[in-house]
Image (cartoon, rainbow, N blue to C red; front, side, top):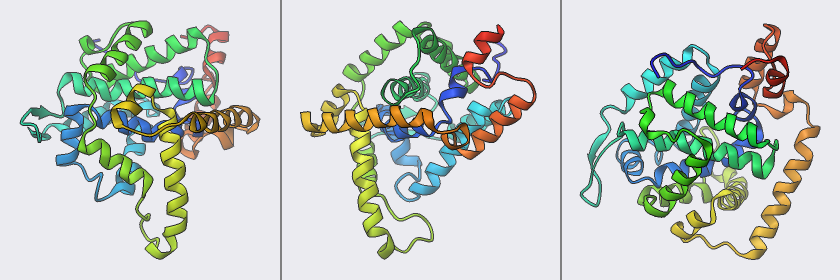
Length: 288
């Protein structure tokens, strides 16, 4: 695509990505990303994800806000990300050469966002029609063009994307050191900056158990098998009750409580400018 456009108000991804429910799948998104051999090797060798977990999470969140909700700022963020990743290359522990800007690996990072947002909506809501699911995937392809993902690496349709994703799970993803490190940090999160370790022990244990449980529950069963995660029928029933509770309660919350503050402000400004607040409103107004 020669001149891609950034995502805007009325896109399905604008409705989904900034909702607090979507943040329930962020840990599993990172986990799926680093299970790719190239991504995992680059992250292990060049990222601060083991030494500055909270800082990295904050920077990643800020970056996502810019390239999903930033309008024209998305292009500057895309350039920044590509420049940042250019030096990330080397040889992994298995002797395989890697480069963080490898087209297939770069596409995988974008693909995990699409798949995780679709999964988030299926598990926690909002429920998407088939057409809205297709539009969400089309938003992901559009975002991929903005980020510089090679078009040949992005399946053109949602059905083809699902086939691609299943193939990646069965033939590419690995139980790598990077994936095990992410799991370890989820289960035993370090204290945030300025929080004394002694005060963090109990809340850290509670957060770790919850994060580990929700992350395992949102993963495809095949990925749990690759990672050798124990998941019982009782775990599945508990998770289904949790997901049903989120689906039931979330729609009763006003928008100001459902979206993270930065996204709420962006959506409010767009609405004041006369742009459709939701994808459904865009459909009703005839906007694309």
